[in-house]
Image (tube, rainbow, N blue to C red):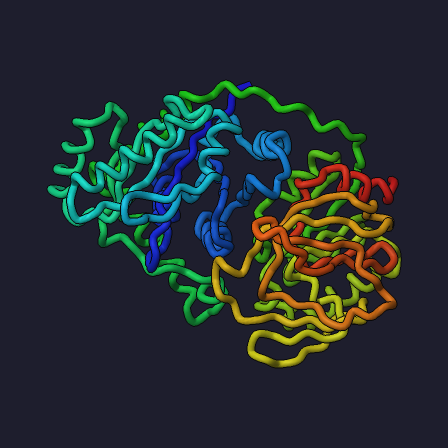
Length: 460
């Protein structure tokens, strides 16, 4: 089996939009047939690239996927054998003496058995930039499975062609690894937040990124696009992972607002398809409510930006309430949860009436950025139609979503803890009929048996 694949790891820089976003958009505009995967990215990156590329993407998470087997199955299910399957991951942050590498890039190299192209920010002196680059290359070479995995490097924040020429000469004297070009400093952009991207007044920032990408794509002798594509196609042979064995469910799964609103990527759709289901996108403002769907999935999304509008849309409201009354399988993940309580408070402090399915109150806090997410381990504390006591899942706790006063009538089914501090953080997970909701962002791939057992409740 052949799957052309390559990892691009861009340096994280404070006060600047990630250069990898510009690079990916430019790669697409340069005519390279590409399938995009993201890893260790801010939620704003996910939404921004979906908006720019106007196509589905998949989010690989080295922690929440649960195992290398699950990650390889997800990658294999979503990959396109005819395209360059590109994984964009954060390399790490610059420190005084180098870059503090994130473990995700190393893990991806090992799990996907493919090459990597780091993207470095140019410092004031060519020698200093070369020193940092060589330090990172040595770290990859020393890591298990990292031998000969660095296929080339790209430099960014370069002021002039002359500066790049000096940098390339100094770097080239030290290593045979290719320099594939550079991104000029004048193509750098200010960082984006989800608030910027959802707000119509500032959403033009998407156009700023597209403009930078277009300039980079069509600049002469800037980036060696064809070589970058060829490096991915040199690594085609793919060793299939251990197969996930399940019986085909043959169910129709409606994914609410997935293309426009979800921050999960297409992960859920790929898992449902792997389990024998037919995933279909449901856009509440364009499509008729899918009353023929046996399963309805609400992915984690930025509910605070569209909740009021959605709840005022009568066809949606009527359809979801009828589906719950008919005991269809409904799974509500992450920031979609407050829609199902009695009321919720938007980030501006206004109170809104919700669906009233559960007796709790929800609230959305203003967004702060990357610190809003915390990796957690989730433990099921009781048996139910969807949970088994002591069963484990993985995901994220969201600082900007709050559930209060759920009452004793609907006890929680899960507890979760911060894996870094090894401390218990709280409880989540409530059911009514066959409707399950959680204010955590659960990665469905972290426990495929959990999802498979849930789908088996609905026979066709």
